[in-house]
Image 1: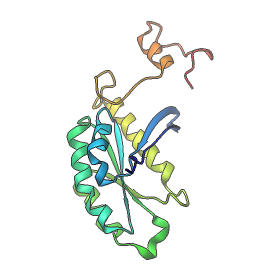
Image 2: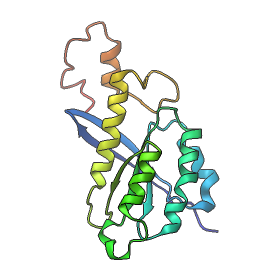
Image 3: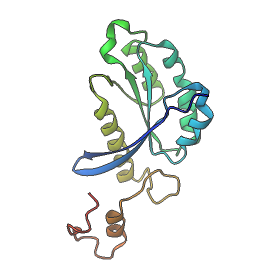
Length: 176
């Protein structure tokens, strides 16, 4: 019996001078594990929907994954569409224009990546985190709301709840 291909990792990135820690769950997008994968959307603030530009089948499955993300996650989830294997352009089955249109029609941010070369991989996470931060700052996403997918680091949370909010945290309090 094959196991669920899953990789969990934390990534800390700098977005506009703010350090953001992302908890990344790679569920491999395998249809046979879809019922298990659906549970990962709950409490997610952001998602990268990744398809293989050399596989029409993975692109065609996007509609189902997008429906799951929108039904099961926070209503304000940030979704980035990523066409992977940009380095294999000669083997492309899904055009950039076609995927761009899909992203536009579904109000998704879009970019192509290459896990092999690393091209745009970090950028996908930075764009996702930046959009989440923008939604927090605009009030569209409330980190205090249960299920928002947002958690403050201990120092940041103490600073927000402290009556001395204007003071910068000391080196000992920094959650960096």
